[in-house]
Amino acid sequence: MMDRCVECGLNVQKTDRWRDIKGYEGKYQISDKGEVQYWDDNKKEWITKAIKKTNKNNKYNRVNLTKSRDSKLKYVHRLVAEAFIDNPENKETVDHINGKRTCNCAENLDWKTQKENNEAYENQKRKK
Image (cartoon, rainbow, N blue to C red; front, top):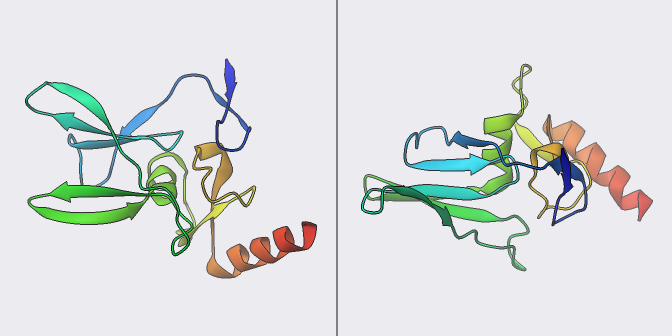
């Protein structure tokens, strides 16, 4: 069954798929729709983590992850891509296919080289 992405309207799977975030296995998970959850040892359940929304200085959604008292701010689109999108050519950049940087569902993301990503961005600008 399909559903609509609330950020961009793309057709997405109706049920969320969750995977452990690399380097934070058993502690944090990312969904194919760009949601993050963490394991609460006291409550013995997964709890949704707040996402830092875009602002004028940073156009991408981010999330703060902590391990051994070391806290890191991670880009949500990159976490989704690393968990759900194959990257056999080891491309380094995650592209938002529709150009909407807040739409982090797996269906809207693709791996590109920096050059390919720049070209996609220029093509999107021309269409506007």
